[in-house]
Length: 590
Image (cartoon, rainbow, N blue to C red):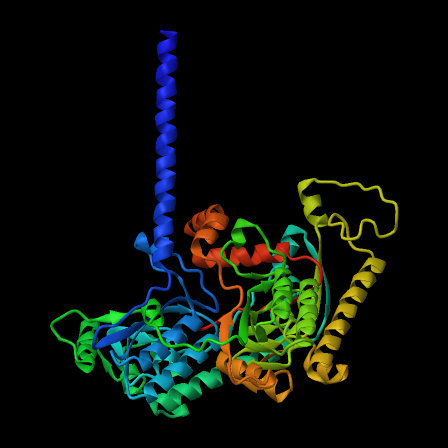
C-alpha cells in the first residue's frame, strides 16, 4: 500500500509539473507570437482609407509596445510623438488615404509634444486632404490639436472644456508639524521652489511670479493658435472662458465658433465616409497610428548616420522599486550610451532628445561630461521636449546647438537639498536613539536629532558649490558669463520662447529642425537618421518588469489613478538623495 501511494504521488506530481511546463511554454509562445506580430510588417491601405487618430492615453517620446495586451483586448496606453508624426506624413504621401479623422478623448501629455503634432497636422491640411474631428468631450490639449481641423464636431451633450491653465502646489508643512517632522532646507536660487512644500503653506511671491509668467506664455501660444484656426477674436475666446460656458450647454461652443456643429458619432462618421468616397451604408474604413506609420516608403540609406538618442524621465539612479516600474528614468547609463555614439565611426552627428524635469546633480554632471567628450569629436544638437529643466538643462547646456519648442519648459538653473529630522516623531511614539562616533561629522544626517549649526553650514556650502558648478557649465556651454547665467538662473523656469530671448536656447522648432542643424554642423548632405538604443522590446520588458508591473497595477486599482500619482510623487521625494536639480511643477489643464 505504501508503494502504491508513492507511485500515485509521483505520477500526480509529474503530471502537475508537465502541465506547468506546458502552460508556461504556451504563455511565452503566445507572447513571442504577439511580439513578432508587433514587428515592422508593411501595411498597404485600401483605396479611400481614412487615418483615424485617437487622442487617448499618454503621449511620450518613446513608447514600449505591448502586443500581448492587445491580444487580451486591451489597448496600449502609450503613444510615441514620433510615431504620430510619422503616421501623419505617411498618410499625407499615400494616395489611398483620403483624410484624417481625429477622435478626441482623454489625452495626457505636455505642451511641446502636442505643439509638434499640431504643426504636422497643419502641414497635412495644406496638402488638400481633409481633417475632421469629433469628440464627446474635448480636453484642452485635445481641442488645441483638433482646432486645426477643417470641421470640428461635438456631441450634443458634450463639451469643449476650455477653462485655462493652473499649477497647483501641495504643501506638507502642516502635516510635518503634526507628525513632529522638521525639514532643513538648503538651496540656491530665489525661484527654486521644489522645496517650498516642506517649509511653506502656499507659493512664495517669487514662485507665484514665475508661475504666472510661464503659464501665461504657454496659454498665450495655445489660444493664439486656436483663435487663428477658428477665426475668432481673443475677446470672444476669453468671454467663453471667463463666463464658464464650457460647463454649460454644448450649443455655446457652436455659438462661439469653437465647433462647427453638434453631431452624434455615427453622423460624423457618415460625413467622413462621404468625404473619403466610401459607402455611407458600410462600416467606416480606417487605419490607426501603428498601421499608417508602418506604410513603407523609400528611405535614404547612407553610411553617414545622424543618431537620435532619447533622454526621457527624471535623472536618478535606476530605482528598482515596484512603485516606479512605470516611470522612465535617466540614469548614469545614459553616459555610456553617449560614449558609445562618440566611438561609432558611422555616426557623424548626434541629436540628443531631452525630455526631463531634472533630478540628481551628480548624475547630471556625469552625463554632461560625456556630452562634452562627444562634442569634441562630432556635433551634438539638443532637441528639447516638454521639459528640459534644471538637471535636464544641465545635460543640455554643453551641446553645439539647442532647439526647443515654444512651449518647452526649460531653465530652472538652481539646486537644493533637504534633510529631515524625526526627533519630534520619535518622541511622540516613544522611540529613543543613541550613537557612538569617532569624528565630528560622523553622524551627519542623523534623523533622530536637530541639526547643529556647523552641519547646516557644511551642507549649505556644498549646495552653493554645486550651484556655482552649474553656472560654470552653463556659462561655458552657452558662451556667456557666470553673472549673466546667474541673472536668468536662480531656479527660474522659462518657456522655450522666453529662453530664446535670454540666450538659453538657439532656435525654436522640433526634431526635424534639430536634425537639420546637426547635418549642417557635420557638413552632411548625404545622410540617414537612426535611433540609437531604441526602447526595449516587449518581451525583454515583460521579463524584467512583470512582477513590479503587477504590483503597480494592484496599487492603482486599490488607490485609484490620481491617488497613486500622489503616492508615487511622495515616494520619489523620499528616495531622492544628495543634491537635487529638479523642476517641481504639476500643471493642470491639458
